Image (cartoon, rainbow, N blue to C red; front, side, top):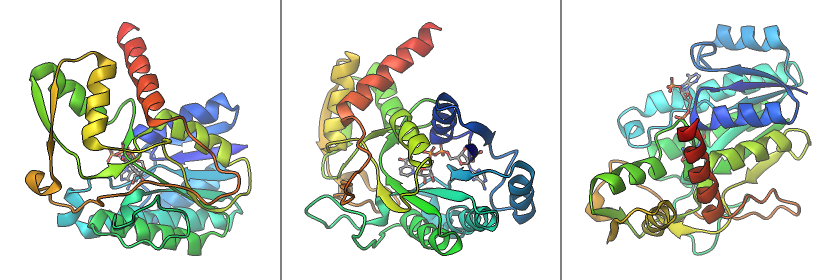
Length: 282
Ligand SMILES: NC(=O)c1ccc[n+]([C@@H]2O[C@H](COP(=O)([O-])OP(=O)(O)OC[C@H]3O[C@@H](n4cnc5c(N)ncnc54)[C@H](OP(=O)(O)O)[C@@H]3O)[C@@H](O)[C@H]2O)c1
C-alpha cells in the first residue's frame, strides 16, 4: 500500500513514517518544505506525482495559545489545507487520515467522550480542528478522523520534555491539577495509524493512551519513572492563566465495537523514557 505522509517532519509525522515503513508500506514522507498543505498547486502536484492509496495528514498548526491571536492562521492549516489534501486524495480514490484533538470538546463532561459526542470547542485551536474534521469529512468519504490527546514523543516540544528539563534544573514545579486527559506516546499512536489505514473502518476514531490523569499526576509519574527528585505542587487552571482556554475533562473513550486500544499512559511514558535513553547512548 502506498502511503503519503504530510507534515512528516513533526513529532507524530516522524513516528507515522517509521511505523508505515515497519509495516512494509511504500512510504512517501513529505515535511513542510516539500509539501505545504495550504498551497493548492503543491498539493495537486504531490498527489498526482505519487498517486498514493492513502494520505496521512500529520501537518498542523499546533500552537494552542498562539492560535488565539491567529485564528485565521490556524484555520488555514487545520481546516483549509486539510480540506485541500482530503479533496485531492478523493479525486484519485485515496483514503485520507486527519488527526484531530480532544480540544474539540468543551470539557464539561463527566464521563469519557465517545465518537458521537457533540464537539463544542472553547479555543481557536479547537475550533480550527473541528472545522477541519467537517471539511475533511465533506471532501472525502474515505476518511478517518482520528482524535487523540496530550501527545509526546521524540523530536517535538512536549510536556514530558519540559518536565524533565525543569526537574533537572529546580527542586519544585507548579502544575495544573484540574485538567484531566489521556497522555499519548506518538510511537504508539503512529503504530495504530499505520494499521488503521489498511482497513476501511471510516469515520471518527478516538485513539489515545489508555487510562487518564491530571497534568499534576502526569508530572509526578514522569519524575518517579525518571528518578528525578522534584516536588510537584498543584495549581489551578486560573493560577497559571494561559491564553487559550483548555477543557477541564477531555478523556477520550470509544463506542466502537472493535477499537484500537493503545497501551496505558504509564506504559507509554516508560516506553518513551527508554527510547530517550537509547537515543542518548547511540
Ligand atoms: N500535540 C498534541 O498534543 C496533539 C494532540 C491532539 C492532536 N494533535 C494533532 O496531531 C497532529 C500532529 O501534531 P504534532 O504533535 O506532531 O505537532 P508538531 O510536532 O507541531 O508537527 C506539526 C507539523 O506540521 C507542520 N506544518 C505546519 N504547517 C504546515 C503546512 N502548511 N504544510 C505542511 N506542514 C505544516 C509543522 O512544520 P513546521 O514545524 O515547519 O511548522 C510540523 O512539522 C496535528 O494535526 C495536531 O493538531 C496534536
